[in-house]
Image 1: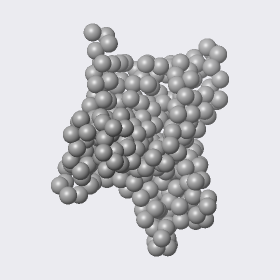
Image 2: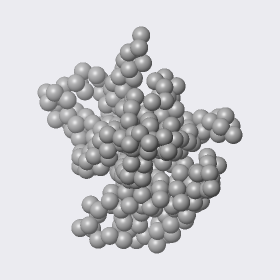
Image 3: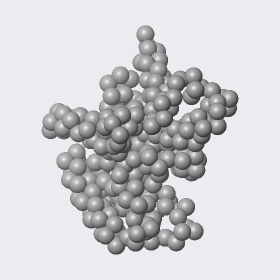
Length: 324
């Protein structure tokens, strides 16, 4: 029975992946999808599955896993149930920097957009933490208020950039703010892979340290944890995950808030047990949200950020009232 939740999580991830590969404008059967993945389908079917739907699925899994893993790490590090890349303005800072990079950089340097998004996310993280610090530490209320302020500033920067953007750069800048996977491609999935995997390994490496930090910084330091170094690495790794996700999929909110809480209810609060499961659950949730975004409105496609917001806002309100 102890392994049942892990089995359910694995089944949910596979089901979300299968639904994503079967969803699209062209109606394909499960057999056709399997043949396309095996390289034995007709060229037109293989083009739809391998060139369009599979990169979109991979991007959804990487983005969702990155956001959920960052959210779980930040909640553990700050001992704050409301810590989330979207609410704390981290995603907004990354989006503002990415939008500015898309508009300002020459075409030959657009490959640096993810680096700009990571820098913006790291800057927003540092700013929120500095604004929220008080005599007794960073309280939930101060963190949320700081996140609101940073999000407002990031929104102002994005609107200014969009207003000044030239015609051929405007679609790319606008895509950063949409929170959509519609422009997924094999290249984008490959580009995001190192931006997601390397920071994730850093967070997993510090899973035990995050658990000890949950007992208090003084206790963790007494057990041999270099608190400033761990805090800095976790912050930077979380910012890198959020920046990469924003650069390739735009702002997708509440995945980093909802997923760790759901996993904590099932597997308990231990960060070492929570991080991997949160990443997998976030990947499944984002892939499922993208499926809903493509199916909810016939003949149209909603941004996946809209779906995650509809799911996440009621959860956030309930959590805020509970922690008040």
